[in-house]
Amino acid sequence: MTAALRETLGVLAAMPGVRAALAATTSDGLPAATVAAIDVDADALAAFATAVLTRTRRANASAGYGDTRHLSLDAEHGRLFVATEGELALVVLAERDVAAGLVRVALQRALRNIQ
Amino acid sequence: MTRSVAPWLDAPLSEFVRQARVSLAVALESSGRVLAQHGFTRSLDVMSVCSLVAAIHASGSELGRQANGAPFGPLHHSGPGRQVFLAPVSTASGTVLLLAVFDDRTSLGVVRHFFGTFAQSLSRVSADEVSSGPMTGDFERDLGRNLAVLFGRA
Image (cartoon, rainbow over all chains, first blue to last red):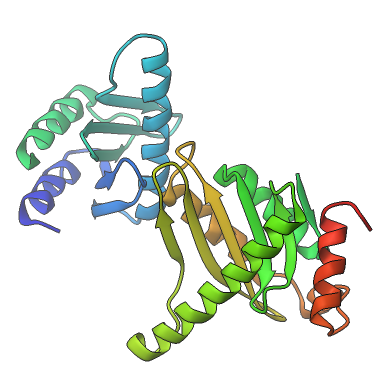
């Protein structure tokens, strides 16, 4: 793991309400680096978050909406955020009441930092 | 459609194929004798795939022993359109090899995850269930009969 990536994930994971932050490759759905505040199955999180992203991308492209750069999924007990640039995806798993706007901004900033 | 000659493999392999969204899957003994398959339409394909998988596994295991002190684990090869995932699973009666072929409808991460579930399912199968498979000890005869069963000719 590069120092920049570790630092970036550390900043994301330290945000209030964030359970885990990881970087994954979008094509194979494998985790590249993980920082978790609680026990999280990083392999499963990377696999499913990138799978959701890939399908959403295809749906949006089919609908003529262009590329998908950010994905937010709200569930009963938590939220999933995925932001992507090229082959890399940043994934944040958070509590339901996390400040979603702040996470979104932090993810975009994080992507810029590690480019 | 998943077909097998080993009833204890039916549900785990069907679930693996469905959840991991792989297009082809075959489970076999490390000798190359086929136990179950999904997605193949010709027995000749299954026979050649099983031979190749058994050879790859044997080579990889021996290379692992020499280079690593222990057999290597799962193997993944990626092509321009399709990818293969090959991994051994320990069962009560020995090693079962699983080969899965998949495309961009799924990913290596997803396939690996559901392979873990598949392996867990097989680890819970008792020796009695595993040994109930119809094997005579004659490799050619068993292989021929298993292929016939898998392709509805028996």
